[in-house]
Image 1 (cartoon, one colour):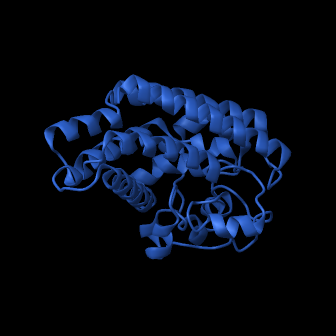
Image 2: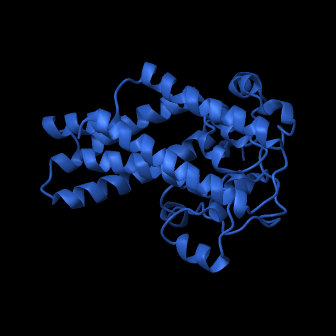
Length: 273
């Protein structure tokens, strides 16, 4: 599949999913927002516009392009063993999801990486724009890991494209401030990370911050011992963000981008406990 076509598919899917959950948040919010939505959305959406430019300047190769090259050259595990194409697509996507889970844990464990990732956690509220709030340098590092994983696994181009679309969609979904019936959430969280599950990860309580690292599949948290079902203070009573960043002035775009270099990393990194 041509990279230009894959980019069009990704952008189109992103716009559709964003519009869906933005409307859902208006008509069925889970929590009342504490900070100014205008300030937060201006900052978070500005970061969303900046990130693709920075990533493409520093990392001009798309995952689909790497997957196509790996397929031609015979690189990666799935290109060296005889498996049906559909099985390679599904297996590749599952293994990529495991890599993203482990990457997320590492960004919480290594203080240098945590400095960049803490920008994502410093948001004072939790809504779909939080799922877009990543420092540009974190995304460059994340993209490097993802491209390496695509080549090493030998993910087919279709698998790389579908995973990129799903990762964007599920990041918007599991950060959304939407109300889901509890019965629906109990079923959904068996197959996908839900907002009720991921919201726990954005709690100011450290043992809750260092749980529920999954983005797409919820299985890794359950299998590897990082799953926490509910926040101690409940979903409407819990405090979102980081204890050391409670000033709404830090939500502006310039202060947000400087946070990794000027902000207090606190006690969040896993290896400090």
